[in-house]
Image (cartoon, rainbow, N blue to C red; front, side, top):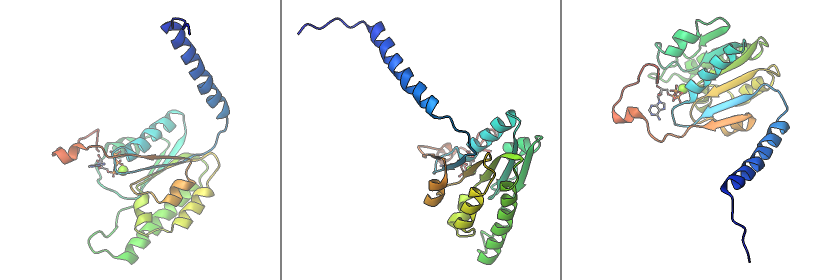
Length: 203
Ligand code: ATP
Ligand code: MG
């Protein structure tokens, strides 16, 4: 059999043309707009910081944003200092008062319920184009909040409102309900090599 010599330029051009056709078709198929539910979970770093990146994106487009922080790790984060001051941002810390030491279940459940009432109000506020529920998964994992109630409130939100939920160990039912789910994988983290949390990176 006689094989024609392959022209690398021509072969590259043909391959790229086929690829472009596939990408163009996929873009043409994605013609819907809707409020999205995103879940950012897993043990790797990058969940909350990704959510706050979306807050910046949303503000850049003139959307109003609600942020509910369910577990307050520390009070000196750059995201809170910067974003909570921006026009169009409602920033609520709802996780103060969980009793890690005394493990008072009744009190923790009450704190969680009160926090969820604030989050629910955000989910009913059509003026908010993006709502971030940071570290919500822990309340679900510990049974402080009822998953069915949370799913029902998410489902009932305004059709164009986007919601981002962060936290490790997101329940399967929450991932099933979401439109976009990312699981951050912990490959390595500087903390384990003895580097303390760095401003601008970790807080
Ligand atoms: P970030 O806010 O940096 O995006 P995250 O939301 O993915 O982190 P969390 O579990 O909420 O992760 O932890 C918050 C803090 O712990 C941050 O300072 C982060 O850098 C740090 N951290 C996150 N993942 C790890 C890890 N796998 N090992 C050690 N520290 C971590
Ligand atoms: Mg986080």
